Image 1 (tube, rainbow, N blue to C red):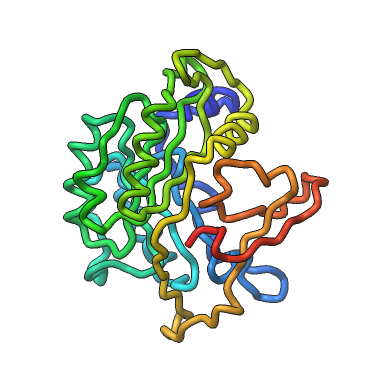
Image 2 (cartoon, helix red, strand yellow):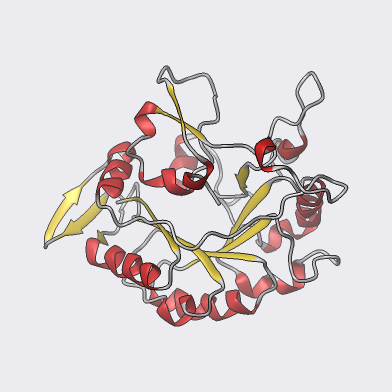
Length: 280
């Protein structure tokens, strides 16, 4: 984040409400939502959804999620201890369109954050081991049956610390044991395998190498009961199905990716897939 902000001449320490804050509610000229029913939006991925500085507008963000019960929202934090006191008053046991994740980049953070994650009222829970900068044993918490997915990737950009194949393999094996989806998205800039250190600055190659490791796998499927604003279920045939460009076929992130955003900058043809290969 800090590296990319410097590239854009942005102050990483400035906590701001972005101009795209209400993007999930944007409509096209025909009045249809630009974000389709069944899509997954990753929220605040270059910051932290539960930053103290964002307390004044977080409920407005939750209100947008409340207005779009047909869309899946992926939340991520390094501050799970703040979550319980900063949920909407009508949260109850959680909303069915929200997936909540904590970051566990090493064992110390896992031991701090995983017990809190399991205690929080969310219907969908996951773990982000990225950047993975040390070995992590999640098995004490994976056995709870609450975790639906684990995402993993190495560190990038300035001064990237190495990610070791053995660390990733351990996470993959543990998730396989408990039938949990595991997605190795990218190796990171510095990747170590069989005692040899590889420098991989290009992120597309990192994602390809992660894919070719065959460590990712789909576990037990969980349903998101998506509805319209009147709580009527959305028929399966009306839900968004991810599609990808041909150069995405060997991307490590594809397993849990929302698919191509059709920004118009890519000339690669589209490959359509079945929904089971998308974010479930």
